[in-house]
Length: 423
Ligand SMILES: CC(=O)N[C@H]1[C@@H](OP(=O)(O)OP(=O)(O)OC[C@H]2O[C@@H](n3ccc(=O)[nH]c3=O)[C@H](O)[C@@H]2O)O[C@H](CO)[C@@H](O)[C@@H]1O
Ligand SMILES: C=C(OP(=O)(O)O)C(=O)O
Image (tube, rainbow, N blue to C red; front, side, top):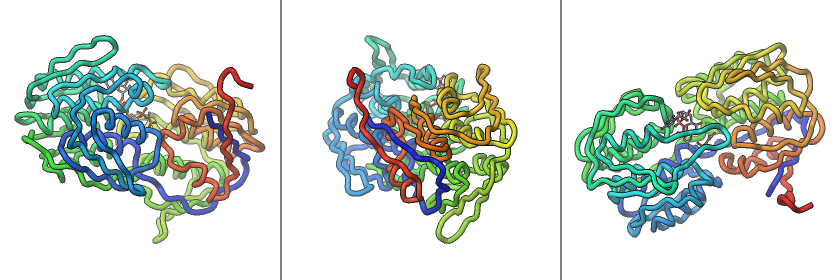
């Protein structure tokens, strides 16, 4: 297992390029199952989750290869219909195979993803939507068994806004007979990226990016040929890095159009943004002003940036309030931030962050992807060395984070840590 050792205190100054979005790449990879033949996805980030999804497609019989940041997925021989527990347990997004498999193969056996560090995360809405499309669903032995000769269009009202749920149902509906309407659909930009790629492959989807998505099912789709959108969560994380180290980062390929709520909050905190021909210059000179947030589905403040903003706010000049409304257990970073000297009180889904003047390096443990990013940010600002264990979480979602930070002047090294039971 790797850990990161960060010597904090250097303002980050330099240029960082934002990679393709993890949360767009994963559904796009699953969507290649809808067609037979060779799909091409460009701007794919080199991440553990992308490799896991590649392995899953491989077990289904697809051939996955890559050249630089372009992924080729040939589904000509993809006849499997089972997403096994061993893969799903390492990546919840494997559930995105469910919709495409039922739609193209007529059956699917997908391990139930179960909960994870941040919450229970059921998939009842995915299943409810598939059932409305005529799919038979059974849970047996920890697996979702789903089958349908041919799905049929349906009018589906989701009870809760779900990103992967919307994506699963959109993908399934692309090959259904008739028209599907998904109400209370997720409006996240990654849903739109998926729908754009599907439309270019012959799907007929309208309303993506609104709460009502309408899909006219087609007999078949062509393979995908698409460039993945940049990662808005990675971009927001580097904005926070510039802010917390009081540095100046030129962020290249930041999808500003998808970051309105985030940039608004960073500006309130006193971070400056200057678009230039070379990229977006993000800088800060002094302690952040307090900023309170409530997380929400897009276009609200993303839960995936709550922990990173909290790292920044741990040094705020007064007191800030965070309300997490999406996941019931997404303050796992709080006890670790406290180890670095932060003053944070949690009551239920609310955290009150009283700003401190300094953080000091300590040994901390990453518990999930964004909690890890939060600890990296805090470590960059803390005096002395911060040792962050279990950075495999970070490698799920941040491409080359050590290199990107080091190139902007951070002192970061990766060390391998003895596993449990060893000294
Ligand atoms: C791969 C991917 O894109 N992951 C993102 C996706 O996760 P994911 O798609 O898993 O998250 P959802 O949007 O589904 O979850 C939102 C809320 O709905 C609940 N829920 C969801 C489905 C369901 O059938 N029943 C139900 O109750 C969840 O437990 C959660 O409380 O959106 C989350 C919310 O923006 C992000 O944090 C994740 O980074
Ligand atoms: C929660 C996240 O991812 P996943 O849905 O893949 O667990 C995330 O990207 O912050």
